[in-house]
Every structure is written in structure tokens, then in C-alpha cells.
Length: 136
Image (cartoon, rainbow, N blue to C red; front, side, top):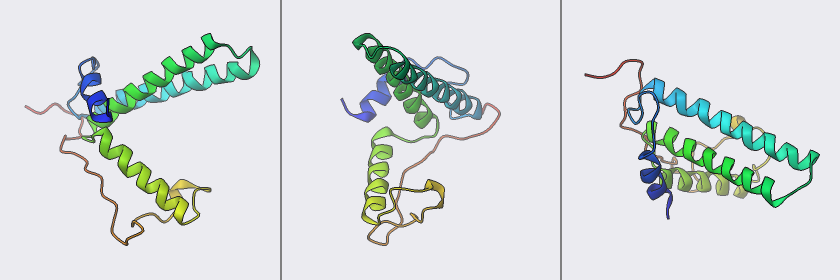
């Protein structure tokens, strides 16, 4: 399965306010869900440190990571981004950082507006509208 297929199938289970509209309510819902699920991953990983490292606990972490993936797919969907493009763009960004020896440090302060070829990196975003109100 590729990322876009996962995103297509995950979308069939999207039941939340303004699902698949690209509206701010849907974006917010997915963002909050993503943060919550990431917190659950962290909480269970914390338990690896505190408690016995068991297969059962690792399976629970795997399930939480799956929930993070689902919310990531839905947030990307709401933003009009397909996951294959997102993954490819991210890997290019990371490769450029490695090539420039800028893997460490603050992400927002790195100069990464252009690729190693001098061309701006491109990620297709859209065309879903972002706003507070439903469109008629």
C-alpha cells in the first residue's frame, strides 16, 4: 500500500465536524486529534521507561502510531495535500539538510527555501478552501 492509497481508504472513516471540506473546523479537529494521539504515543513510551518493556506495550504503541498516521492523513486531506507528495517533499528536505550539514538545530531558522539545484522545492497544496463558514 502506498501513502495515497492509505489516505483514500482512511478518508472513508472520516466522521468529524466538516469532514473532508477543507474548512477551518475540520483542520482544527484533525490538528487537535493529531496532537492528542502523539501525546498518547509519548505517554506509552514513557511507560517503557517506567515499567517492563513488553510486547503488549509495544503493540499498544504501534496502535497509537497508527492513530497518528490516520490524523496526519486526514489533516493532509483537509489541507489538499496528498501523502505521497508530502512524504517525497519531506525526504528531499531532509536530504538537503544532511547535504548542507544542517540536520541539527532549530528547524524554523534553517535556510531551506531552495533545493540543492537552486530551484524552489514544490509541494502541491490545495485546492480546498480554508475558512470558517460552509460554502453554499
